[in-house]
Amino acid sequence: MLVIPAIDIIENKAVRLSKGDFNSVKQYSENPLELVKQFYDAGFKRIHIVDLEASKSGSFTCLNLLEEIKNTLEIEIQFGGGIRKLNDLKLLDNIGIDYFILGSITVKEEAVVKSMIDLFDKSKFIFAADVLDEKIKVSGWTESTNISLNEYIQKWSGQNIFNYLCTDINKDGMLKGPNTELYKKTISKFPNINLIASGGISRIGDIIKLQEERIKYAVVGKAFYEGKISIEELSNFA
Image (tube, rainbow, N blue to C red):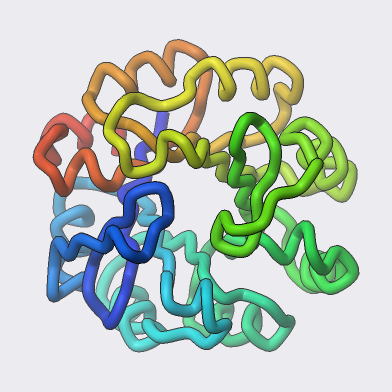
């Protein structure tokens, strides 16, 4: 199990939302770079950064932060928020971003996505599947689809995409435990994918349970920021 600390950015500050609601913003740090250094010093190998403003506007707001991190620390970054065209990928690749997280675009603009994944090593892509009752939601969780999680993974794994960040919207930011059964069921059906569990982790026992179910990766954010899990506990999974 590899734990990936999550840092969501608004106005160059580290924040968290509850269920993706921008009206529920809570700020945790005015200096995200220092936060990354804290994780790095604790032994973490990868961090998860989302540009929340870009996810709505399509214009990146934290490129300077990304550059600072890559210029000062040897840590991998998986980055999402606002990636909508080939030039976005080229810009991020030049900075040194290790993994590109694609969300709504993978549902709404499949042709664009296919041109993107043909340009880069497909192992660099992480497709974000945000689900409510096992159906994909898009556009910041404001639009519903009839696409099931299984259908989504079936389609894109056929294009050799094997990294999936799966967030249960009902669990995100609520600190009530992850949807372990959903992940267990998904891994059973698609044993060759790299599933990154996201949403709801509230204590170290949640991470241990995910590990027991053969989940290889988990994103952890709010539980750390709210003091539910210490960085020392998390670092056992760094």
